Length: 387
Image 1 (spheres, rainbow, N blue to C red):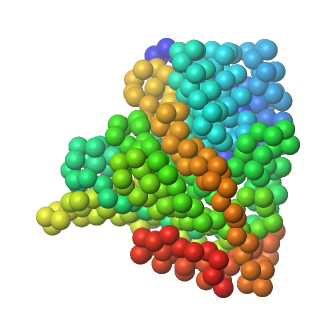
Image 2 (cartoon, rainbow, N blue to C red; image 1 turned 30 degrees about the horizontal axis):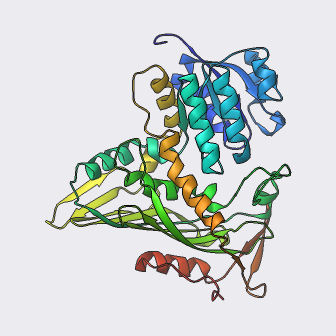
């Protein structure tokens, strides 16, 4: 396939799916691809419709409708979580490699179905956890795997991203446990907006470049300020099979001025590795006084996962994040659900509401500070006493 244009079908072009579309339309490597179709029941939510029309790209309502008329080398799936398994299996059955957005699916049984379908087809399935395609994350992971920092002890991550009523009202599955047909969704900060940063801890501690560490158990504290079925705030301690503990802290129920971009810290026998967020470098400080710096994981464009997936199809590079790589993240989400952990309702007298252009933002005073302190101390916080 080297030297030939890669034919691409895009499934979902509103929201995050527009990033893939813009990469194909605007970036230099897009000239190596040919968009042969777009699947979206509501394409009007995409701002690039005129560009697609000028190129004569046909629009389809369903993936079956597309495959009834065309084929593609690669299917890029930005569809809802509960559609990932069916769309991936359908694409593979019709001869398309797949890049599916994170998370891989809502249950490990769905991920296993996808793996089986991939193996039957003999094709590639990439999962869009973009930090796993980041050049600095991959460089750091190689150093971790080489034993440069000694054995891992603990790792933790914090992300605080406010989300409004409009975020939860943008579709019929946001904040939901299942869809109307009973399919698992488990939408939450841990399985959607901040899923990357839980996965990243697992990925960095995986024993192979394309594998993640396996969770052996999990303790989670869950809470919500929004009127949703799932939770908008989580503190979770993940126990890995090798005895290492991970701490994951994330919330949508915080004020805009309290936003905290994703950060992480890993402790090893011989080093402390810290990423303070945004465009700052990742810094490893070894016990012998040596310092090693890596670029911010955000220095690699998010579209890199698209180009790496295409390179994997053409056999010019290995795939860093496939279904097996993403499965441990899904295991964590599934273990939280199977444990039946109750979701604490934040005290309604404590919840503040701020008007925004996207509806009201519900936030809890003191919550951001509590989660920041828990991250600093490396402890799992209680969420019942936030006032």
